[in-house]
Length: 243
Ligand SMILES: O=P(O)(O)OC[C@H]1O[C@H](OP(=O)(O)OP(=O)(O)O)[C@H](O)[C@@H]1O
Ligand SMILES: Nc1ncnc2[nH]cnc12
Image 1 (cartoon, rainbow, N blue to C red):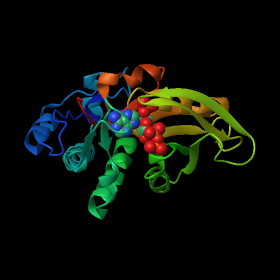
Image 2 (cartoon, rainbow, N blue to C red; image 1 turned 90 degrees about the vertical axis):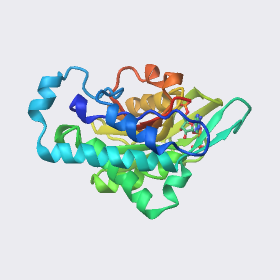
Image 3 (tube, rainbow, N blue to C red; image 1 turned 120 degrees about the vertical axis):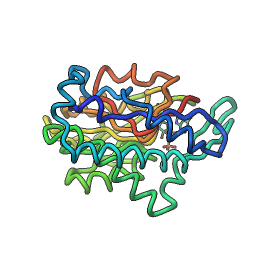
């Protein structure tokens, strides 16, 4: 998976209360010319500039506007599910059909910006919040959808991985044969915090012989450095929080 570096944009959020500072969020979008996204570390700015069409520019500005809307819809809950965790609730993104649609469009744009060569054959979504948008995204990309589920939820032979996340230890499973050897797989989830969940999902995809081409998240908590667990696999997030 590769992407023009200047097409991938990051958005910093500085508040942890429920009110989103849309003005500063907007400023953050406008100011961000580089990305924490690591879609194509080898691409140089001049390569990216040469390849950028006016259509791509329009997509990038559409994406930037959408990010502000999405950020404004998130809610923040201190000390949930356990004391010390600042929980970021993405469920409001699905309450308003316009925001829901904007989210799917933004995720689709983020993937399409990578180019045709990076189009996934399979979207793998993580139990449970990756199921909220993974199937819809797969349909838009004409790709399969395959779930990673918590242990004991699926019948038949499964591969299993254990992992630690921000607030506990868990087990993930995938059904054998759900991903065919060599298929291009994009793993999607709502949030990357410590990266434990995503790394476990990636290891399951590899156990099944899938070609793990990348990770896509709605939101990243960079302070928890989850990317460090993803082994350098291209990773893209729509939004970031500084919490
Ligand atoms: O990067 P990490 O530290 O691993 O944390 C991120 C994971 O934690 C949350 O899932 P959770 O296990 O709470 O399950 P849920 O989606 O069923 O609520 C979230 O939806 C991610 O999957
Ligand atoms: N801080 C957080 N908010 C919401 N979901 C999470 N999953 C892991 N950490 C989280």
